[in-house]
Length: 545
Image 1 (tube, rainbow, N blue to C red):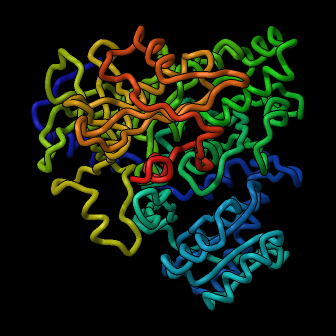
Image 2: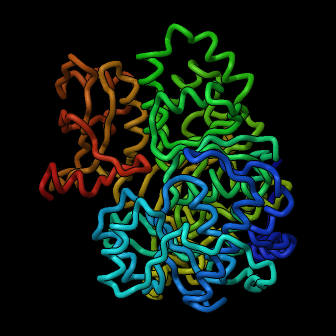
């Protein structure tokens, strides 16, 4: 499986050849191949690929009347999780402009920030969001278009904007945990390569039916869970808001469609397990049998997946969740292989066309390991005889173009020779021949008493404690140790715990230098909609640093 390469130049050449060998086409163009197939099932019924294409073309006419064609103006749009999102996105692309998707979960001040940061020239919304978007449009002196007001007849004489793979496709925003959110610009080529790679890697087919309950302003909800089925002609069942009972009904085929693919964040899987324990345990044998025989792929991402949760889900459904790793800036770059024997905690290997670089913590990013997937096999720059830990850098056509209108911020995130600096620490296991993420170098790598300790690994170990329901491990500044290890713990109902209890239990599974020296019992651990914890904010709020 492994092949050694002698020079980094081989990786550069391979990436270029891999990219050039793939013909980039608009996502909406594939709709003509599946015209009569149902693309989206949602709360309004069902929409075929052909009907969504026609609506998108009508909308593109209206956009062209307002902005002209093909000049890459930014357009903010706010739609529910349904077919409206798809035809609005396609309409923006057909007119040759850049889409900036919003979420109803964003507070109004954030929507204002996005409008100003992108200098958007047009807002689009569905009727239920008209009041909110009208306020923002008036304050920013921008035209607001409400979908549903387009011409009912498609102008078949209209010529769509000439597609250019290097044009900007959409702008997705980072979470903004280290300052204001930054707009991540992805080109048409970025989006197409990411989508096509996942379609191949995860064995998508037009027979699949995807159950979608993720936000549509993140890579997970867009490229992974929506664009992949749209590209291959598969159907998607879109749920407007997450409800554990509704998700179980769909997964078990009780709503008409037999789901074959499901993707979620760890928090969603945890909520589904809670629902199972409350209402489904009596049917556990049937549920496990049905899920094993009807659902072919279940994916977890966007946040670390605790091992106990992985194991519990396997016990309930017979599915080993496929873990993968990605970021807003590059889509998915590491994934467990579809046919592999998955192991919890590991995010697999580079996807085809992706190069991985593990570097030391110095500014020169000295190479510890390089690995590239040429589409056939993994290529390493040297023989690997031991585990390798380092800062993760990535290169490939999947990597974003720039932070919108922020050249200095963009430059800061790349090395001089073009590697994107993810900010995550990563380990390659020589024995298992796959990678795992150790956490953010800024918050998840705790430097205590001369040791560099992964907070994620501590969390994984401690979550096995029967009284711990949820946990976040952080580093707290200390004059003697550099940082002390603090565990913020949510306990199971009617449970009690002292620091001594925790250290005594954990001491059987962990080295002494990894044991928490601070314990705080909390009612909940705040997380964003993708299940991520803002640890910097937690430390500031709880320890006033």
